[in-house]
Length: 526
Image 1 (cartoon, one colour):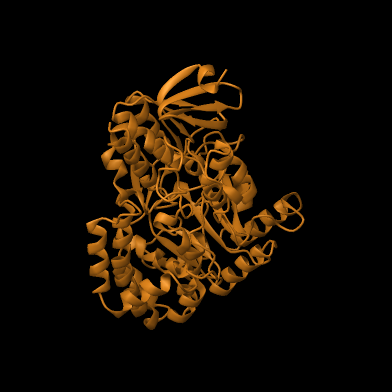
Image 2 (cartoon, rainbow, N blue to C red):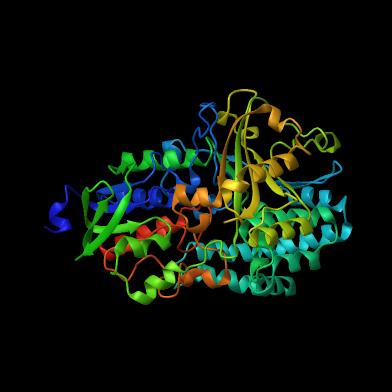
């Protein structure tokens, strides 16, 4: 008996993966009147965007071990199109990014460019001027990114072309930045542009989250601070999981379904539709399409030998934390408010340093931490990004208490293994934080610690890559996830890709899901 004959139920569309992109795809297709089922292997939705009480001893503390701040979602327009405000979605403006020095000094990059430039001027007048010029050029380039993200990766829209032409006409600085961002390293770019330790440090910290600073093409990270002056950054109420919950409510309101604890073992396509076989032996028929809203590297194994050998090989080999540099997060539920007593009194502008994303580490320290991690070593001088998430959204913790995410570079696979290094890596990171927030350990109720390997197990992401595929010039647009596999349609009729593995990539934008849904609707002429 074939898998189709074994099918116990049927839907028009079956989506493998309940991350935010899978849910976005599902919402668009359900709104179009199709019968949609989302399958998620975990007992909760969200994937990289999940928020929940991960610490058993702190059931009222909502932790977000993956994404927690968003610079892409508003620009993408998915929330407006799906009317997610009707389903409980609400964003709060973030408070920018701040760098903390070892002697009580701090530098804040705020949405107000004038305030940011004035703060930089306290450290270097030259850097303040350079920052203003760089931001002007960066915003012109980000407008290209905005329009291209809304476009088909193989056929840029007219708006994208107009944005390119306007940027190229914007002067030497724009053309130079555009060229260098795709060819040189972020470390070289930062070193050549800025002189003050504070400005170099904040660019290194923010840039290292996008890509290793010493990899060719990583200079695109120089655009990162321009994002908060362009579309701004936001944080969903309830953590990023608040957005996920709104997407789920939207899907259910349009007749879609979600099934948790449903690990997919195989996808078998035939004709226009196909079947999805679950690990428990059950079989579900998809009459119109199956969408793999999971990391693309998983797809060749799910479909067996149905993909052409060369394409399957290229997808499997798509780089994911390819340098060996991964992430290490300590997500903590705290019994009180985390304060910065050595830094807050020095702010004379009224800025509450609990609210921005906080970075610590010089350019040299961030580069060294990345290089050590790539060699399989836990960095001996920790650097970090710290988010006190409840400082902006108190709904994530009981009154007067906090939830935080502490994020630092670490090896994907340390020499000796994570069983040997997990405790030491956490100690080094927490010790560094306590130089700035000395009550961290004393207030900790419990932690949810996640290595890159843990993240891979939880989400299926290859090597725990938070973007599914590395942010590299060779993985942009039609080259994402791989040559011959770009876009959303696969070489198998009726099977689509709809995750961050596809254009425009990682970050919480919902655009891969939206574009995937558009491709499906066009193909089935619905």
